[in-house]
Every structure is written in C-alpha cells, then in structure tokens.
Amino acid sequence: MDKAKKKSRYERLYKQIKDLIEKRSNNPTSNMATLVAVLHHKMDHFFWTGFYLLQDGKLQVGPYQGSLACINLAKNTGVCWSAINTKKTVVVADVHRFPGHIACDARTKSEIVTPLKNQNKEVVGVLDVDSSVCGAFDQTDALWLEKIVALVFNT
Image 1 (cartoon, rainbow, N blue to C red):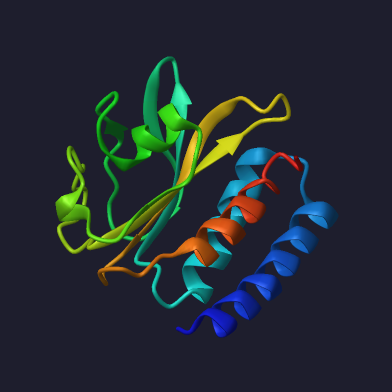
Image 2 (cartoon, rainbow, N blue to C red; image 1 turned 45 degrees about the vertical axis):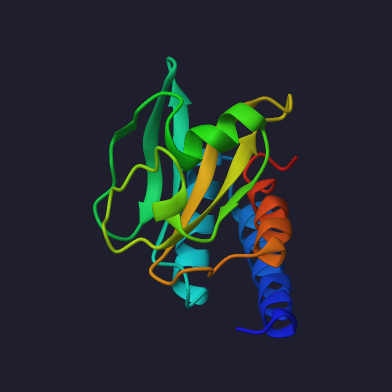
C-alpha cells in the first residue's frame, strides 16, 4: 500500500475507533478489544494484531486477533520487551534479523510494536502487530498506531 493510501486509511480508522470508544466505552480492556478488531480486519497487511500487558513483571497476552499467541513473553527478550524497555515504537522489517525475536507463529516476517501508556504516562503494555510480508511497516504505521493506541486510556 502506498504511503498516501495508508495515511488516508489510518485517518479513517482513527476516527472510527475514536468514535466507538468515546461514545460507548469507559473500559480499557473493551477499548483494546475494539481497537484490535478494527485494525486487524481493515489493514490488509496485519497478520496478527494484539496487546501484551504487564502483569506482576510478566508480559502476558491481552486482547488479540489472529493465530494462537504466546501467553507469556520471556523477560527482556524480543521486540515487545524492546518497546517496553525503550518506551518507543519499534519497527522491524525482518524479524529473522532481530536478536532474540520470539516466534509465536513462524509465518511472521515483520513486526511493529507500540507502547501502551496509562493516564500517568506509565508503560503498561504494548500493541504488537505482525505481518507475513517483510518490510510491511514504516513510520506512517508508527505514527498512526501511536495515536490510535493513545485512545485506549484516552491520553
């Protein structure tokens, strides 16, 4: 998908998700589930879409769409923990070149992970999106996924 088309689609999805959350929900878990469902079914290059949440020092799967997920991700390993530890979105063009990548599904070729921050700006989890295509994600995805993830806690 070219950048202009991708940006336009994200703009529409942002508005749709914002409207759904603001009018109907005050529950972060419901917001996560709604956000994941919309993104997963509207973005053609999204193969697995979901949240991993910090629980007692563990990073555990939350609401998601796609194939079976890893329940716990080994601490300080992989793309999700990299986003947690740096507090920044991580874009990986080829997961096989990322040291310590955790392969929950062998079909995953590229990945983007965006930190989820609560009202106090503390990182409480991540949005993890996988694609079966190498190089599927870029800075357009990073920018818009950061805006969309901020809707979970209305931050």
